[in-house]
Structures are given as C-alpha cells and as structure tokens.
Amino acid sequence: MAIATTTATTIEQVRLLKTAGGPFVRNPGFVLMTIVSCTAILLTLPAIAQRSLPTPGSTWGEIHFPGSALPEDSDNLILEGAVEQGVDFFPITKDTILNFFGSLDYSVDTEGFDWYRRLELGVGFKLRHYLSDTAIISVGAKYEVEKYFVDERTVHGFQLFSNWFSSWQLRNNNHGSGDPVRPLGFPGITWGEIRYPGTQLPLDDDNLIFDGYVEQGVDWMNWGRWGTFNFYANLDFITDTEDLPWNNRVAYGAGVKLKKLIGSNVLLQFGIEAIHERRWVSDQNNDVIFVYLNWSGWWDPRAIRLDLPE
Image (cartoon, rainbow, N blue to C red):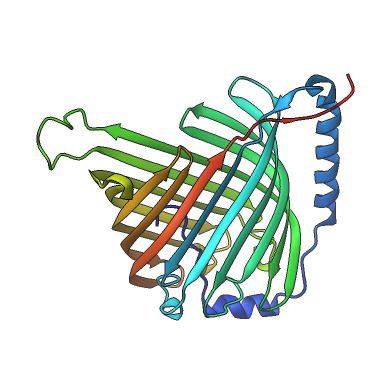
C-alpha cells in the first residue's frame, strides 16, 4: 500500500515472544543518549540564542483489510500510524541539519494479536541531509519504549537508524493536446530504512533490519473536488541478519486509488491493491487483495522562539 505495510508475523513469533524472557533494558544506551543530547544543546546555545528554529513534523496512518497476506490475518482489520515532531536545532550546511525529535508509533487490530496491539514512544536526534527538494536522507539514534498490550510487556532501549525518502512527478508534456486518454503525469515515491537493533524485543537484540518500498503510478483523471484517479505498481521488501521468517519477504503488486491533496501538506488516499508475497525463509507464497484508506501530513508551523540569555 502507498504509505506503509505492516511486518506481519506468524504463530511461531508468538511462541518466541512468550519464551524470550522479560524486558530487555539497555541502561548504557539511555545514559549515552542523555549525554549526547545535553552536550549538543549546551554547545549550540550561544549560536541559537534569540533565534527562531524550524519545527518540522510529520504524521501518517492507515486502515487496511485484511491485516496481511497470511491466513491468520484474513479477517483482521488493522489501524496503524505514527507522529513525529522535531526541532531543526543546528544547521551544519545549507542542506544538512541537526534535528532533535520525539515520535509516537501505534497499531491496533480487531483480532487482538499482541504484535499489532502496541505503542512506541521515542526521543532522539538525527542528521538530515537534503539531496534535493524532494529527496532526503537521515542518520541518527533514538531511545524508545515499546508497550505490547496483550502480553502486558514493556521493552526499551537504544536504536541506531538510517532512513531515506524521495518522491517525483514525471509530467506528460502532451497532456492537454485534445486526447482524453493521455495521462496527467507519472508520480512515484520510494523510502527505506536500516535499523539496529530491529526492535527492543530480546529476539531482535543483535538483528539488523533493512526494509523499503518503491511505487510508480500513473495519474489518469482528475475528478475535481474528489481528487485524482491513479493506477500504480509497487515493490515492498524487508530482510534481516537473523533470518527470522517474518522479516524476510518481498511483495509486489498493483492497485488503483483515488488520492486527494488537502491544502499543500495533507494527502488522503483510498484504494484497492492486489499483491503476491514471497517469504523465503518459511517458504510461503500468498496472494491477497487489500482495501485501504491512508493519510499523511507534514508541516513546519510558525517557528518557535527560544528566549535565551545572550
């Protein structure tokens, strides 16, 4: 689907979660995060006194049915999403910025599976580098707390990550020539992330995860206030170093959606998508048709002001 896909698990993962022991706590990571954050703030206070700082933020969410391509998710409805609020604290170059952020990730389902009923809070910092106006790469670290509600387990620890995002819109120069079947344009997006450890669960303690997504679409028709009619094909993948079955899969598919841009920074999408998923560790192949509604938004509101002594 267009924004994110859930890394669905198997019954085998449930057994692993329940036998892996108690919460895995990395106190040295918390201490390191605190030291780095405080040091960065103290070093940059003289330079940012009385300055207005950009406060970029973003959010996304999705409701989709079924939950995944796995048989146990065939009747499962899932709601998931995330919110992040940051402060561009210190510009290193014109295109590279040190950003401090807080984040919240959530998911819930109708079947009551523990791996879907979870909440994650995080705080961290990252270097953001703009490759262009529509492409950005980030490298950073965060301390996160994950709460799993069904098993009533809380885990927390330190995570390193690198992620990237890019979008493009290839225009059709022949549009408007009188041919009603000519497409309006060819929008596409891609994103990816490398993170270590994969999660704060004990079974992911030494796990490096790499996942990503690519989509290329065709805008065929503008339906006025209802939005734009879009056909697309996509590729979604995830792999890890521990060869866990639920973290080693690739899915490719095609779909159709109606997308609506609200203002200049909120995107709504409603669609249907057919995919084929291959899980090579567990030797599973599954086909599924998803129905989904998703949304995304980004903002840089009126800059905050730090009233600091000069």
